[in-house]
Image (cartoon, rainbow, N blue to C red):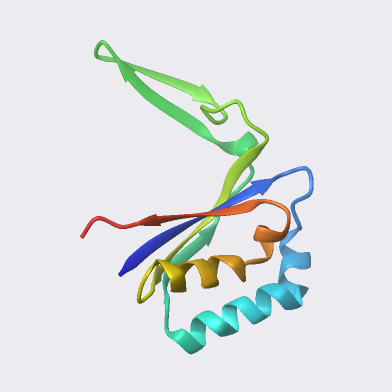
Length: 111
């Protein structure tokens, strides 16, 4: 079954790309995914300050800077994984380093 992991981050404590690259927890997580052949796609997102939100209301396109939600936690990345079931997806999500200070939301993909 396919799942999307929404990697939620508190940008005030987010690691730099260099720090993430040297993080042994992230290296172990990536190694685990490679061993499972579970990762289909993934991407780290730029900070929310660079986001653009689009809404259409009554036929008018409204564009604003930043995210729509007023929250401290933001989606900092996504991963599309293949897992046997939700239990396996939970194990994969729990291994992500951002689960230590942010959270990882798991969503099944409609197929």
